[in-house]
Length: 123
Image (cartoon, rainbow, N blue to C red):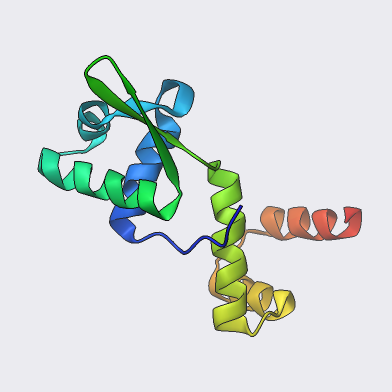
């Protein structure tokens, strides 16, 4: 898979809805129904879908009179890309620095801390 960029907020929102649709596939109208009010214009969603196709995050296929869109990667695959870019950009590639930052900024319960320790020991 070629190098993917980080999605904008609006692009990620569409991907979020696509990942949540049955079969992770839908047409513009189905995606639009996922939005809360006030919903964006149909043409706005269609434009973002076109951009996502151009960027390689989504593929399209025409069936009857509708164009169906499907993500080219899973949510987990995108998370891996986004977190790797975050690690490189903000933490100079250091996993330890990234984890120190997140742990230092989260309010973890004792149970969550124990769970993290157990996960580290298993790894």
